[in-house]
Length: 82
Image (tube, rainbow, N blue to C red; front, side, top):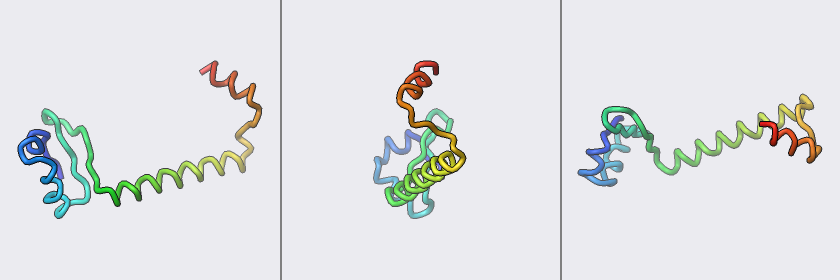
C-alpha cells in the first residue's frame, strides 16, 4: 500500500491504523518517489530477529571456515588500512 507524505500530513498517524487493516506494510512516497516503509511493531521485531539470526549464521560460517583472526594488533592495522 502506497500513501503520500501529504496524506499523512493531512490525516495524521491515525491513518496508519486504517491502512494496516488492509496491508502489513505501508510505503510512503515523497514527491512521487517511494521513500519510506512503515511496518507495525510486531513485524519489525520479527524482521530484526531474522537479521540477527542471519548475522549469527554468517559469523558461525566464518568461524567454521577459519575466516577470522583474534589478533588485536592485526585487527587494528586492518581497520586503519580500510
